[in-house]
Amino acid sequence: MGSAPSLPPTGATCRGRGFLQQRHYYDWRISSLAAYRQKHGLRIRSPRYDRYVRQRRGFLETEIHRVLNRLVEVQRPARIVVEKLRFRSPNLSKRMNRLVTNAAGGSSRRSSAISTSASGSRSNA
Image 1 (cartoon, helix red, strand yellow):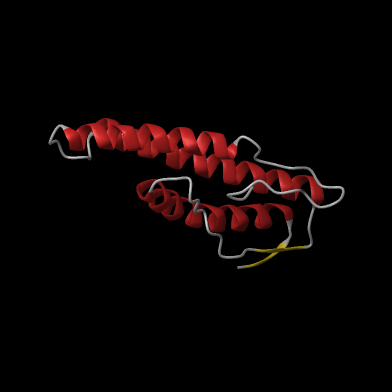
Image 2 (image 1 turned 90 degrees about the horizontal axis):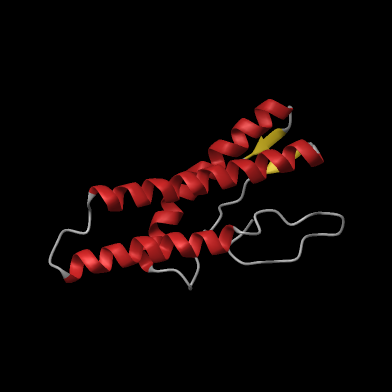
């Protein structure tokens, strides 16, 4: 489930296939609201903007947890190594890249810790 589509290793399945499309949808929604508010001389932050950001953060956390939990459940790895992931894409706006990076980094580390403790795997972070 990275930022770019890739081929899964032999015998593996590709997870998080709709991730990029959904991420672009959230980028469009948040960016267009921010542009509208800026164009009309309003502060960018508003209850609706905050709600959109919360929804995007919830989507990211849910998707990361889902993919990692499914990976641990199906493949039962003896050890999980968590790398520093870059959740950035040149196709997303600066604002969305910043929001995604801030939300996804902590979520992936928390999720791997939860998954490994539940399955008995060892985790190297």
